[in-house]
Length: 94
Image (cartoon, rainbow, N blue to C red; front, top):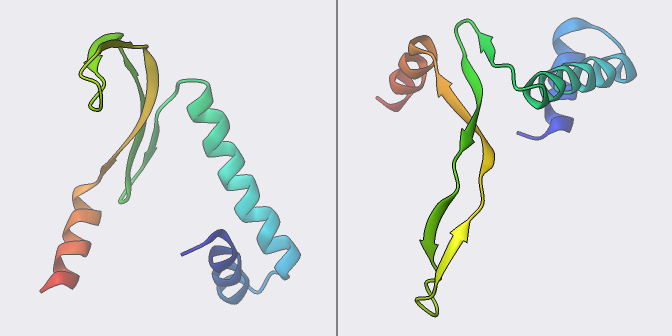
């Protein structure tokens, strides 16, 4: 599903214009982005948690040359689905 698909679904389900639907989707994504950039976590009941974690500097190895390299510290984004979402996905797999 793409952002355009999301806009289309909001348009059909809410009755807002396509322009208003696009603004709603953009606003939600911008709020999520700003919250994660600030280092805060996002908890959506029945869906899951988005968490920004800090990875420490570590030693690695270049797989082509075998040379040891230092992998710099960085932030990563993780998503942990809620039990409700896990159950919904697994019910569809049966």
